[in-house]
Length: 382
Image 1 (cartoon, helix red, strand yellow):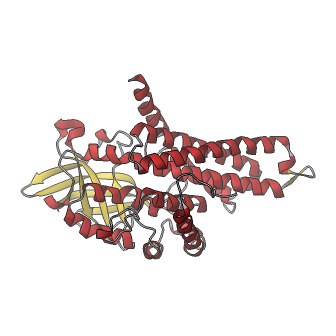
Image 2: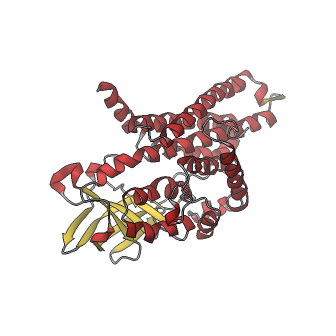
Image 3: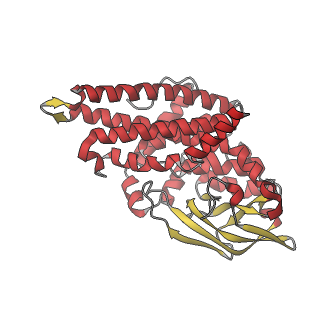
């Protein structure tokens, strides 16, 4: 069945672009995904191929080497990657990190970093989470202190996607402990900086193709020009851009849920149980019917969210609700579809096993489901 062809937020130009993305993934991702899983990272050749094909950071203005397109092109890349079984790499760079530099970077920073991010020669990471601070970013302990015209950064970050490969990393640090959320600032740290070190490549339940690491900052000296945006505005900057991050995760969730459904349907059409096809059993048909309805609702809702975001009308609460609903729906569908596979669903040679394994963290990163409910609940309470 696949991702629906008829969508309200895309036109014929988007359809042509989607076809090119699918062709690219057939050639460059699918033959290599098993290897990426084994090596626990997406290799540089894939990044470079993505850059050459124009799949990285398509919203970046042409002045910096981008295509100057709108977020719908990002959404297509993210959907197709997630449907193919890959949740990492380009979406992190395109949907999340580059926006910080476009939105808050100085002209020097934009000229220095964006062309490489677009070409795939520069892999970027963003370091917010710490061993003692996840969804509550105000609890971070990484510090940046002034030293003349420079800043000295000390701290530890963990669960950092692309941490092993990154050439640059955006770091969230406290610059004024007494100021609370208004004492947090963003800095760009280059991987070659003295005092910067990568820890172990973390062993995760799923998404093995995504290298995830600890990062250490031990007296890392950066110039004042490394500050991203204004001092003390880091928390506000994150809050302004996090709706796009949460929308991106919702997009992944919807596409991956569709793939899980498609895998289960094909399996049920072929598998025999008690001399009948699995799909001929009422429980199977009812399960697939319920999920057909959820997916139908999900695609319509996702299109509405993408359209609103392109109009700059998607609020933080709406993005939180989208991330919550789509990732919870993804988990329910994927879990049911694995169950439908029986013992085969527990074998990693079946796509459903990876889809299930990779789905679990979707309800955690980018704001846990519980934190999102708190955000939505506060809005309700006024």
